[in-house]
Image (tube, rainbow, N blue to C red; front, side, top):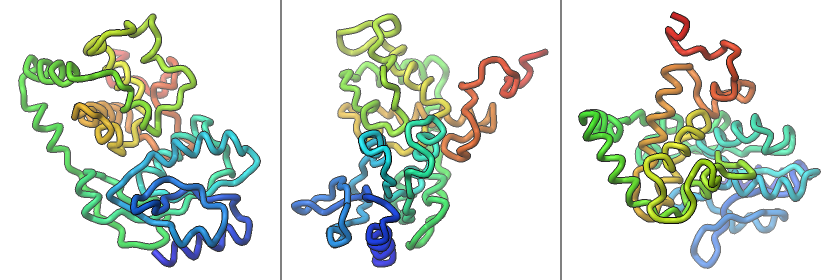
Length: 268
């Protein structure tokens, strides 16, 4: 990754950015770090085995340093996250510089990613899309009753740690409806099922960039990504909308009856 490191060094030295958010090797483990000096980049790593929600961390940094331009290393899913954050006014236009690196084919396959690369790649072999929905197909082969029981069983494992929400780069609301007593009954475990998880799935329908961090973070091994992938697929099939694809395109759930995203056959 020498080419990328050199670009990061140039961006810092020429003051194109005030800092760059990326991963740094720290005591043998990669952790998020805000590089502000070119000499610090000797410790930069492009690690695939350990993933962090860098764009979510970027929100906090950008809010604290609103006049600064911040660089950030992005893969395909992280660039999609940036698009969603910019269109939802969580980041300011012109205040973020993305530095793209490609995912390996191994990582693309492991993540079942259908776009494992950003729009501009500094270096690295661009992986082929891994359009694998076998995880969904396995569940959808079940009868409606069996699918319901499957999900109720999975949701019943939930310990309400909010890990899936806290790590999600598309969860940025200042007040969370999952903690609204008028919508979700407070206290107790597991949380109200299925409403707790379905409520979050609804909010993710036109935001989810399919990074899979939610499922990686779940301590109970609930396959929540399968649920979000299914909802995302429905939004694509119904509205032709893909989260994180176009910065100037609103999500269909943001429209209130203007007809732009009318359901097929709704007027018949």
